[in-house]
Length: 269
Image (cartoon, rainbow, N blue to C red; front, side, top):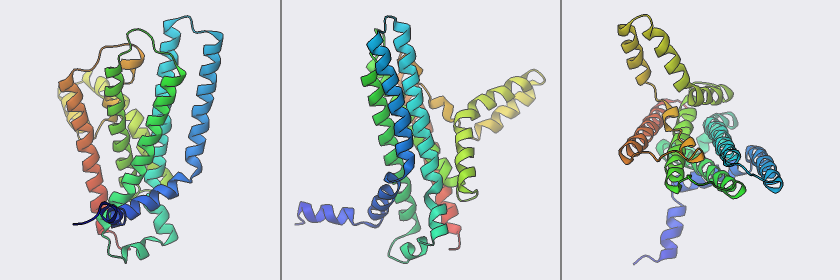
């Protein structure tokens, strides 16, 4: 019978686990984390200063809560795009990928270990930022814990979707371009889609239907943004809608991961 310590060590020493650990340690030392932490600290200090002066209106508390959750989202999205887009291009430049693949480890294990390490850092940072916001800003009547849990879960899925998109794009584009394109898509695709649909609808119903079909082929991460439900004391999402949105984000995340896996598998190193 295998002892717990032996089984634990063997799991840690698995190929994907080793890639996860090395990638996590590498990105945990980067300046990106410290830069976004400074921005979050500035928000916390400013919010605490406002609280010391006195928050006498519920609207002010809602605004500060919305600002904190939005800032948490933006900073975490920056980390997701930055980390995921740099995973493989830096390995290609340093020439450290070939020695790794020479070991008994598959490309799928390398890809899985790297994306999981990136997402672990990003999701951990986002959770910490949200917790810091909740500590810094007082809640007001009407803000429901269930709405916070729902919005946070959808936000975490959307960040995983962004990370998968940035990593997939990094196989075709330079690192900076892949990160910028993924961020522009992440925050702006929903607005662009609605703008194009409205302009086409004024000209032709058939054109509007065609445009809608075309845009439906590209994932829209903005449908997963629901932090305002909690910040503005709105009602919670209905469970069927919440589960559909979760499945939508998870399915597109998996699809983009498979695209990255296909491209990485076909590359000549």
